Length: 594
Image 1 (tube, rainbow, N blue to C red):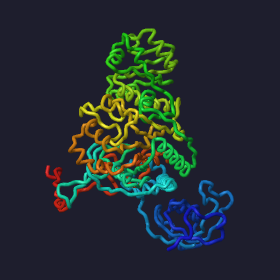
Image 2 (cartoon, rainbow, N blue to C red; image 1 turned 90 degrees about the horizontal axis):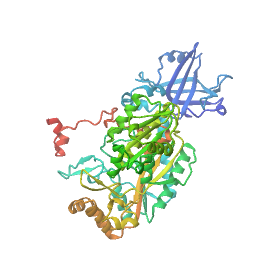
Image 3 (cartoon, one colour; image 1 turned 45 degrees about the vertical axis):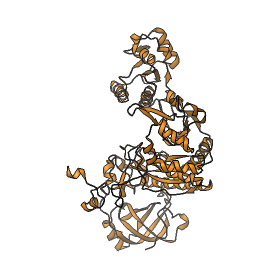
């Protein structure tokens, strides 16, 4: 068994020669006793015509089924004029078969293996994922992922990085997302954790003098799932010594420029725009803003400080804000749509969603009676309110108000798109660095400061003096790379001085010294042996490829993804452990005993 060509290789130059192809039957056609089939492999398709005078083949044809694996031998011929297929790379030729070997006859697939399968339930497609992956769109997504990975490795190799694997079995450091725990049979009562990221290992590599490390790292988080989240995922992980933030910006911009060019052939402009965290929140209500459309948020706190509308004035005078944006052209919003927006706002902590419509030359709103003519003029001029517009408000704490309007902004953009009044072009590449994040924030539930990114992020040097007196004002050397409302990745310059790291752990984050020693003692000790200044970043490979492929979910670019319940329907996992397995691990199944 040896094929001479793949199914996307034959051309006019091959006419008159013999060829052998092997692949899957894509389709079968009987044109008045002349039998055709399209043969497919991962590279493409070739039309095969069966010799009508070959009795054996004529008898075989009715027995063939789509998706069966066959081997076809014959002569390459040019197609008759007018029968060429411009949609196929091999459309000028066909293989005139004189022999067929059936290697495996297929049952009828549970769903069509073309784009119409998108209408089939995802659970069914994931149960038969090995069939779903035969679909050209899915195969193309995996090819694109391969091309991106290849471009990434080549780029880092050219930049003198070393690809180094880090352990999958790590110690549990329960902060941030929930971890997957792995019981140790050889160490009774002890557990490993699957790594959420190689964070501490890659910093140890910098202490070890590696200087430039990267890997396409497998990471694990036991979180509730959604379209852009999986329990296991891949990140482009890297760390560098002797750098500052400018070095990181240039490196990643070069990487993304290379990946876009090598995979989809598009040039992206560098350098990328940079925006402080506070500005992103104030203008767009998000630290990962989608900048492909306007609808920018504006602040009206001072304008309503003495307002007769007590909801607004009360928010400002209690230390909060009043913010609003103009959803231009959305005054025709339906009651159902408006109710959905209100429920969305309430889910984020709002008591309701104040609005003003401008229709038929007049303003309409339950709150109008509380507003003065001066306040109305300010709103009209500042937001440029015209006929057919609707203004949405949020009043309360700064962060919650930003978050509420940020979400409403995205929802209204979708409503405007449905009406054809706005378009978010998926190929309008609006890259952005979001910078100057707060180093930490106060967690009301825990009654202490917690790291905004992670506790290894270095403070901005000019803010160091504020750590003891005004920790809220300390900025971290943290940076996120954002594209069209998606956070592609984030990283920071790290703390490399043991005294500063210890101070952040114990005095600022108030982690008890014994816990610090247990979780991070080896790291603090390593910093006492000449730790270099260093920094890093991690980008989500799955998210990046999803955007390149124009897909909606990262499940579409992962070969064998999990469902939103964390299940692999094809293999029916997770499954049960045997009594012996549990006994060897000294683990008792509470669920089984209950």
